[in-house]
Length: 597
Image (cartoon, rainbow, N blue to C red; front, side):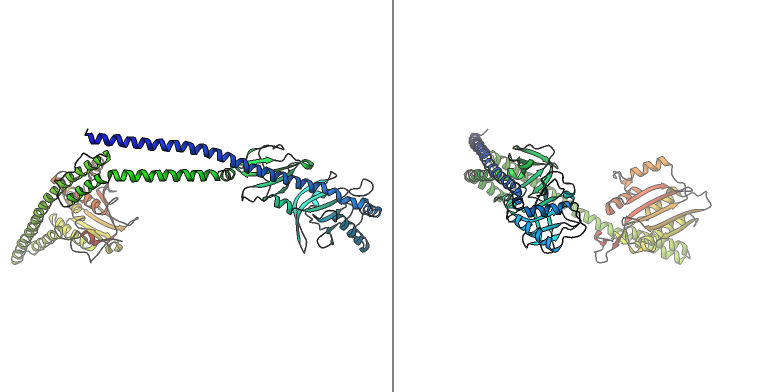
């Protein structure tokens, strides 16, 4: 190996090794920093959430503990206790009289003054058909409707104090969303009924809102498994039981959540918050992203410096390659680039360019040879076009002599023969359908004349087929095949029938059938297989194989020939071509005359 190449390889190896060490060391430092930053950020975030959870638990505990303060005003007035005793003990089907309503409103307003968070107070006695709700906002006392939001809970109330889920109570004027707490009757004896107070939960809702936006964060309060309050649309359910004062990852509906519960459990309630594990990781990794950004920036800067250094090293050698390409572009194809570059990759490129130049030089020589052969073929084609003119003139002389001697039948046969020759060697490759059918009729007339008109000919062509074109000389090989191999002179009736109709997928189906000698099944199978084989000898370039491959070459798959037995004896050949129209604007003899329909 060249000494310069060896030095270049060694220098490149050293640079790459240094770059790899730098990337590995900086990557390890970045990974340690990211892990530490993530742990610190997540710990701070969870501490903030835990602190907010304790504040929520304290607020809820205060709401529940303040409920009993409502009763102080009642127990301090003997008249109020007597009123409640009558209300809860005496059955009644009618509403309270006006003076009793005024007294009830006064008592309930005094109760509400004990706690500014109370939105309304309801009194419910099962022995009464009509019960009442007092609203603190406007001092209104209304009858409890049948569809009262907490009616079902009041009907089955068992404990002296029960806490009901947050519901929305609406009136004609306003809507009240709050937490409802039901207590016993503030009077003598053990009477059935409840006093239900509804508390404003705005403070509770505000405590559940965190300044750092967390879309999945939700606080839930449950009692005996029943959701009481939720800062989301509905309380989340977990697969296992969550103990107070614990935290960890829980699964719900196939998603991971971080759940933490409060150590404070006022009146048996479980207070918790939950946040999507993915969002928690994303929030905690904010500082990690900054570190990663810095590391990526450092790597990019190092890459730019390394790139500039490498560019200066190889710029001179690239200029050598560029100059060599310029010389090759000036047709100096015998020039070859040197192979002693310091950069091994450039040595490989130079070798490829040298090989390309050698291949290009050989290709130009082959193209030159091909051009000579093409001109020779054009001369032969011009000579071939000249020879038929001599043949046409000779046949015209024969036809005229036959007319002079009164042999009109022979004269007509010679005229049809000349017309067939013109059709076979015409310059156009794609012709109208009617022209090809007329050519087949002329060829059939010659075959019938050979057998004294003993062959019956039948055409059954759908008129819609005539609007399309077809390549030249499709039917002539099929007709010739019938007269050469299918015609049975011992039969009294021989016929050949040509059908044509439109088929699916934009195709035209022709069926050329006869009642001739037919073909054994095995031989027919072998012939169908040989149709697809390439033509290797001049003898194979005529007949059915030639026709099949011309159809495949021009129309593509699935066009071509298929041989099959005819019901009743004989042979049937199916010919499939595409529905293509003749474009009269295309030049004579061009295959571009065919236009897909």
